[in-house]
Length: 287
Image 1: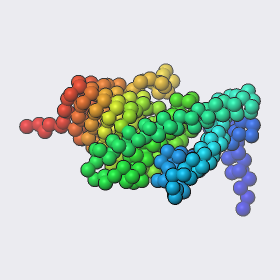
Image 2: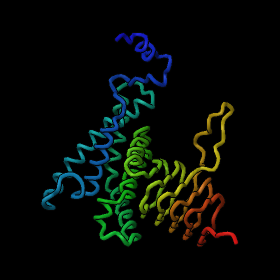
Image 3: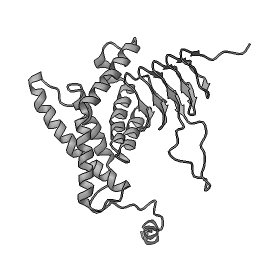
Image 4: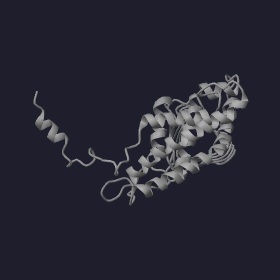
């Protein structure tokens, strides 16, 4: 077989979207490595539930020290890859320094991240009569898995790490069917019951003690365009949910609208206007 012409066509640099090369000796971010990083982070955040089973508490500091150091070095390489992909650094040294600062800051924020995830575990257990204990939530609930990936990814967004957060969120999306953009801002004690088909857009803001069910969409209502037809980037286009809000299955909430505190949104309805606090909004069959 002679595929010379095919190989030459595929090797053409004319199609620059198909030919993207790393900066100096920096490879591109690895999905496999990011999977390992997320699992290692879960091992650190929920010791004994993930990773090696611990025999007693006295061995915890040793294992924690080993895992934290492993996480730092693994994350450092991936952050370097993400920065090299998205930002034009002057040298490999400046790239490594920028990655070190971000990886170090992420590792140092893990205790705060763990405290936040504990509130999410408690929210799932409190809101689901089928949950026997918090351990079941940690081990089994897709909502908790998606939220833990989101919390990790969002922290990286806060540290100005490009690309990596989106890759982490998409890995969780593929695994759980729950699509949380890492740029969304979500308060403590967040629960997603069942979860399949949930979509939370990039500029969504969700308050504290919020529960949503499967099939819920927090999306955009319209998409302004530039003169060349490209969608306008960076505008706030997704909903704001206040504290103590419940959104039931298959509700669709669109646009930069506000759902007030202590509001209940019923299932299978579209919401495109602000909803005042202390409201119960349900679908009413026409007579």
